[in-house]
Length: 114
Length: 114
Image 1 (cartoon, chains in turn green, brown):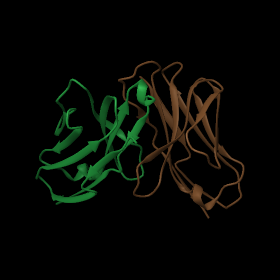
Image 2: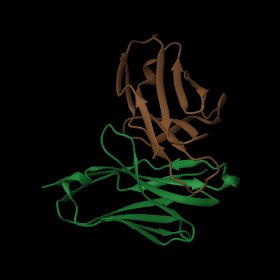
Image 3: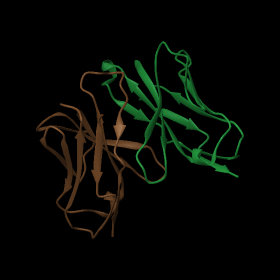
Image 4: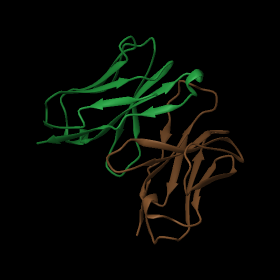
């Protein structure tokens, strides 16, 4: 069964500090992995997209890593800001053999405090 | 540029009443369209997807239905709402035949069935 597990479920960090979110998946065969940011009551917004051959990708203060061998990804937030408070969702897409389907993680809720 | 519109943003409906949520996409042709539901504190669940006018695939048995009367219009409906239909509904689109491209989500509709 295709699964995406994210950890931690939630975390609180002080403004200006760094944090790392984890995503482990079992989707196979794998096509790509996305990290989304979802503000409360809004739709998810894409941060990064990585394919099998990509190990790291950055978007401003967000840096995602991917280890396709261990089926793990991380999202690192540098110098956090209050506006980073949101849920971060890891989404994995399987190849056609896996039905081209997206499997969503449950998300990590981040709260940045001043 | 492509945009996706979803409305209404919030909706409170009594049990047994009908439902109609609308989603439209601009700036693209023949998009793949999706309806997702997000229960509180949980991941997104795919409800329906459509690859063309009149082509609807249902992912889970439920009280809801979807229709695509026009190329860039996707409608989520119910004849009689249940309490369990409460949740956050998201419409999304992706370009056709671009496996590696990210999904773009609408801003969501918060449905509360009372």
